[in-house]
Every structure is written in structure tokens, then in C-alpha cells.
Image (cartoon, rainbow, N blue to C red; front, side, top):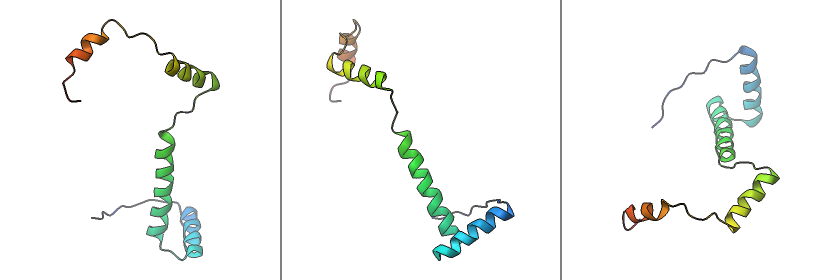
Length: 85
């Protein structure tokens, strides 16, 4: 299913887009959609990664190698978990 979508753009921006569309032998909708989706996918992919400083990276690795002792409430919470999960 497709939906209509209107976009307001300044005349000089439209002229720039039209020039690029002509170079790629595409139509405006395909050109704008393709590039907008590429940018959206890149942003989504980048949001999945959290940059850590060297100090924070070392703290994460240390916590993985030497995890803290479980808190006093953990065994009770584990017993209350539904079976089969």
C-alpha cells in the first residue's frame, strides 16, 4: 500500500534536487525516497551502538570478567520467575 505525502521545499532546494535527479536519470519521488531511506537506515543503525570512552570500555570488560556478587533479593526473584522462560 502506498500513501501520498506532500513536501514543502524552497525553490532553490527544489532546483538542486531536480538537477541531481536529472544526473541520475530518476524521478523525483524515487530519488528523494531512496536517499531519505538510506539516511534513515544509517541513523537507525548508528543509534544501536553506544560509543564508550576507553575508561568506560574497561569498566564494562571488568564487570564481565569479575561480575559483582548477586544482591540479596536475586534468589527470590529468580524463584518467582515463570517456568519455561
